[in-house]
Length: 245
Image (cartoon, rainbow, N blue to C red; front, side, top):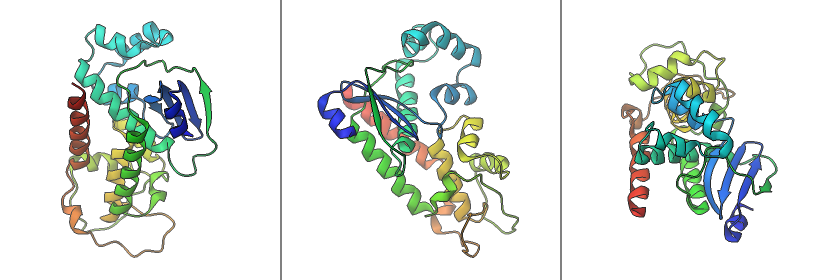
């Protein structure tokens, strides 16, 4: 259905139980999902934008669908940073919207998002990136139940060291907060949080629910637990932006 909408140059919202994709002339201009922090949470909880500035932008420009324009015109973000952060939020939410088992798909013609248009992304690019992310997580630790279940720390000793970024996730892994809740609390994309959770589970720091596996032995990649996924994403976003300049 999404491909047909792109071919027709449709404008509106594609709705699933897992979220929504907003299209303009057949290209994706925004995505949102209850499983992923919105761009407002990423900007404010991440410390990039004061919460009052974000609320001001929503109140004054949201009803007109010009929130992005307001942030630019009032010097809250530069054009390049807005594009990168918006693309990051778009791909993050789209990963969940396009997840298998996301329920029935509906389309509402003419619906526009309150954030406004920043840089459209081709449907094929969005689908390709979502599939790449799904394969990446499976390669890290093939237990997709970790993506929804509240992570819980394991009481074990002699485990591999973790990075500061991963420690932030561990500190919130209390068996009550979901991965999306942890991501929103930290102001980080949900997918990056899932990467940290899968790596931590593979290294033995987190329980892997509903399995009878023995305590895992850390594979070689666990020793390289820096911010590689973040850097790789930024490089792809940078290359995509430069290709259009």
